[in-house]
Length: 482
Image 1: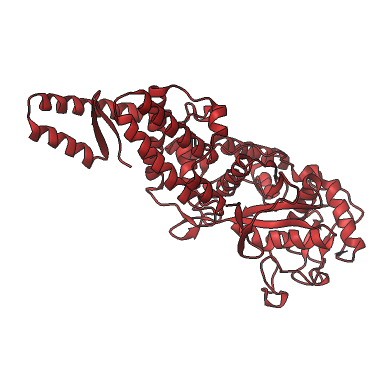
Image 2 (image 1 turned 180 degrees about the horizontal axis):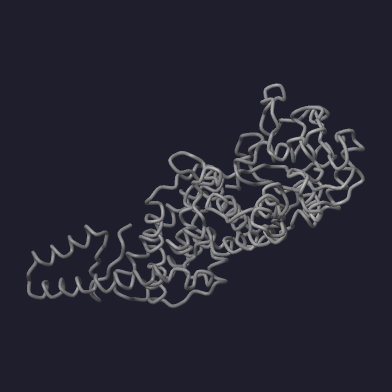
């Protein structure tokens, strides 16, 4: 089965065929670094990290561009309120986002351009739009895209101009007094400074000083690093309109093919409501990492297919913690039995067919995880048996399979990235191991005394607590129930 991916533009799942054989170009909208990251911000990053890992594992060379929006209205307003330079405010939160990406095992992009570094490319793009009759100015520093000059406007989200609400599409597209737009739906390419804004937050253009509109940034940077046309444009579901619709319109109006496929990750919700700072329901990544090890947080995000809403409930992390302990516990015990497996072997080993089919089916991670658990159970069964050449070979094969599949998801417990990341979980497991071993010792004594009732009672108590006891020639072992 070849890789099939959903395309938001066509609303269909279709075969993914790179425009250049063996290579893939991807642009993912990154953070607007106005404040600290919450888990909703991280879902697109984790989702596209899994995509890139799978494409790489499938033998493709991936070029990933993830931008940083380091200038906008909110950054300027929050910096002013905090009494700091706007660029210092943006740099602070850019570092926080980078730390969050790193903590959750998101691989760094090939390029991570900042908007403020690409004014030249933005001016060039605006000039192309002026030359083609798709842009106009309403005064010093204000430049707009004329949506009615582009008949295909609305094709990404399948909307007609006459059906859109009669108001600006976003805060970024509000005209200042005295600079009325031709049409309420026209969006900002360049914005003149507002009264009181610092002079450092403006750049010269042929149409006056100002700063870029939100939509222009991504079009310019995507073209700069990926060329006139590229394979995939991604981001969160909330960016489809107006941001991605506007990106596509201005890029294609400028003569670029732009993105061949659009992919969007769904929201993280609480009680059915999208997480956002404005609603006050965003769980900060720093708070989650204080409550659970980083791989547990990543597992909670990864385990739901990227196009499905992820409902964040009070027990989300607890369930992810239990699963992570089963996975990491198996890898630890199997490694003790058969020795370490080289990372190169894990990264190149053939993966189970069921896992490959699931990942090729629009990154169906839940189905892929079901295959992981099948091999986890097989590995635990092999571990429960007495050590032998044949048995150890089975343990090693299952260890390689489990680690290889988890590596695709960025969740290989033996990856050095996670070393020490789950020290709290390790301490908890050590404490649990001590308690369970005490119970197993009492059970062994009861069995030696032929007190079968007490032996069974101990086993039943452990089972009720989610502890599976496996008897073997070398004694009893325990694991968390699957």
